[in-house]
Length: 346
Image 1 (cartoon, one colour):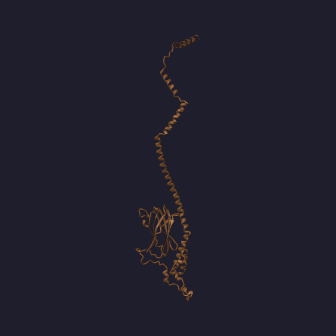
Image 2: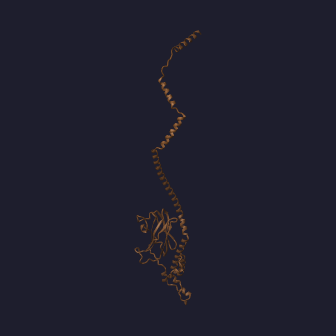
Image 3: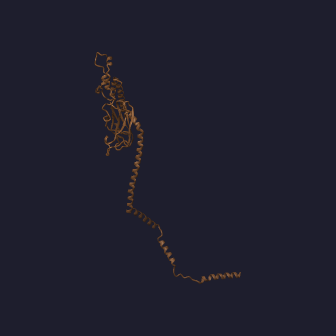
């Protein structure tokens, strides 16, 4: 135990003896310490405080306001706004045109669908029914004349004139009317008066001849023409689209021709019908943009400014009487303006 104690005591003595022997004297601060202290003081001076944060926020708002008022920025924004307005107008125009086109297409589809219904309805109108009745009476009158039934023809003629609003006093007495009147001879019995029917030559004078005139030829045809301007369109765009021709004589060759055009362009389509004295309806021609050809560069104003459309109706011209030419619009952006309709026969 004494040895261990002695050893530990000696060790402690050796360790403690140098500390007690050296004394440290501070004469100057390290440069690093001075730099570190200066940095710390500067950071403390510039450290964030609520007051400084408020001031910084105020400077930030002022800088933003100043930047928004810069002339260069205002000029750029004005230029962009002008370009935007131009582009918006273009887009609006584009979509308005598309909407208008879709609307027009829908309306045209409905118009085409109901055109047939309207045409049928108009054909059943009081005016058309009356016109058809007059045509039927004229056909019956011609038939009775051909059968030499002049008395019946006179009755039918009187009825036709009545339907046409012609008073009896204004109707000129035709040879057929004279033929059915009994002679003013009191001594002749009534029965004998009936027997004194006019001879066949007189009846032939009343009946219009169907044979061509000796003077008619391809170079000198008989022409029936109308220059009444008509309009064949849809809805209310219809006026004078039916042309009536009284045909007292005709030849072996007969052609129908008409001159028509749209209001401004040739974008129009439809059919042309011939209604015979017997009331039968036949499609004899049509018109389309390919067929409507203008001659005048400055626009179509009359029949001479557009090429005619022709159709051979020789097979349908089989009797004298009143023939009607009707124009029915079917499709296109414009109605057909009709300048002239002509029937040429030889």
